Image 1 (cartoon, helix red, strand yellow):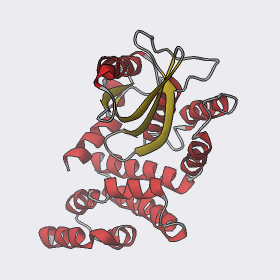
Image 2 (cartoon, rainbow, N blue to C red):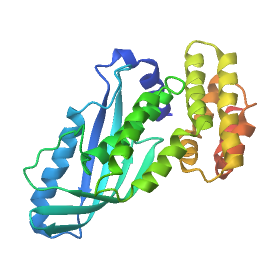
Image 3 (cartoon, rainbow, N blue to C red):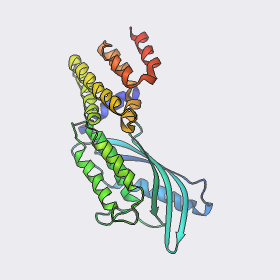
Image 4 (tube, one colour):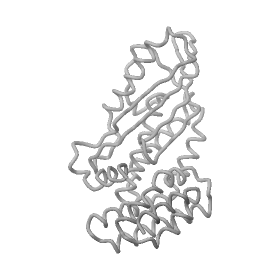
Length: 280
């Protein structure tokens, strides 16, 4: 419930906050790496954190803060001449309903090198940070305005295009496929926005409208599940939002939408039963 209320405030009061940004939380684990590299790895962690705080990831249409957690696992560091190549796995998340796992991240880095955003040549370190940052921001914007993330998604698409002619193109074919699945899932994108509209309607005492928007959102999710029940992005959304059911039951004093929750998240039937017992 706490996370739900935080999300409502995040969506309803965007213009009251100081400025849109990704708020970084960067960690790097390097258990397999020689201790002589630890100082450089700590420097890299701080540099990534500072890079995210410095660069813009928005179109400045809305002002709000979004958590951007990056968990990096360094698997190897290979030196060849003056080049030092890191091979990593990483998780990128907004600490809520967006989770991206990347198993093929390779980039070159050396102590003392400044991180910067390159408008021309592909940068395997900062462009991947930008890519997932744009996905997170764009998806958040989809929750505020119908298809509101299009402009930011286009920035992510441009990074994909830049990667194609780079010697660092490994992994970008699968990233591109995921990108198309995410941006092309119009049912999920609309459902995300309708869920926000339902919250807004409750705040404005429009409970009838809230119920309509909620049912429409859940119906779209149900359609996706029936077509492709293993869609990662839809399942992430469901896992993050199924507990919203209790908020809606308690606020709307209605259970007519519960069959839709049970349909999209049958694995949580015990939780849904508890909600009904608690409020009825």
